[in-house]
Image 1 (cartoon, one colour):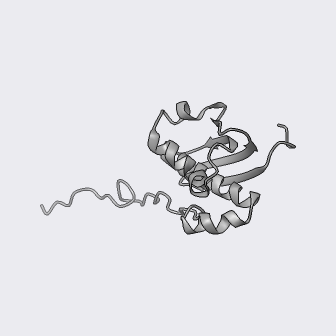
Image 2: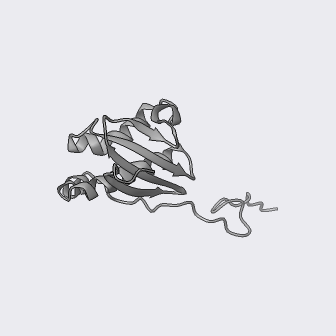
Image 3: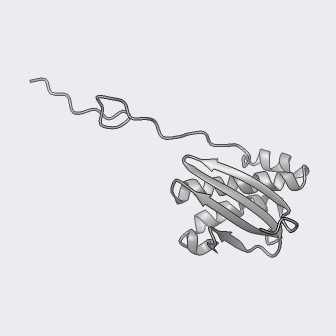
Length: 133
């Protein structure tokens, strides 16, 4: 990996998903796990909008090439992790970006995770049906 072209780096997490985001100067090319971003996200417009949201808020869309390595979880968790990683990387570029992204709620880590299963139950809270007789 050529480190002299890297402008910024950020890590995002959501549920079980982890995303490592690298921003380079370019024209807005999105690469996720060595695949084209739209094909990796199954051409889902909601996911693509969520990833581009930090750039749209700052008004700098199509300025950086985004290279992402993500693992764990599903597409929704990975998309949220990517969005957080991009926002963190953009704050490292210019500290002025921090206030704008913080106000938009893009720098907040969503800490909700799956609740563990308890013994005697079928899932975390689901119990078998009560029988009176």
